[in-house]
Image 1 (cartoon, rainbow, N blue to C red):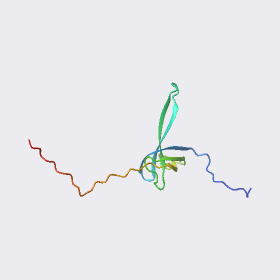
Image 2 (image 1 turned 180 degrees about the vertical axis):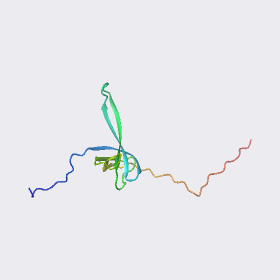
Image 3 (image 1 turned 90 degrees about the vertical axis):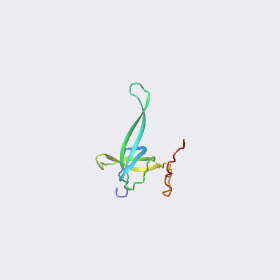
Image 4 (image 1 turned 45 degrees about the horizontal axis):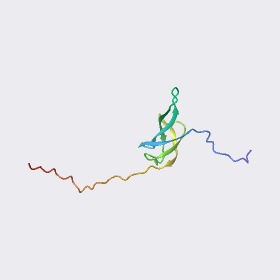
Length: 112
């Protein structure tokens, strides 16, 4: 019995894959999970969206990233998930910088 290797007790944690829609809170991201299910009566495929608050300790996830979140104990009133790993990074487009030296040109009067 003592010779057996002990494995970490992770259990069967629920995992979801979704898209980060917000990272404005400290150490918290909002992940939108999309699933396609048949309508119970009409059997047509419909898209359902759910938002989950997840704990991101290092604040590594950015808006647009595809991430895996893992179920955990309640961390706050709404947070019951933690960031597992980032599956795909979003393409970040650089901000357009306007030089501060250039002031807007004054409007010119039109001659009639």
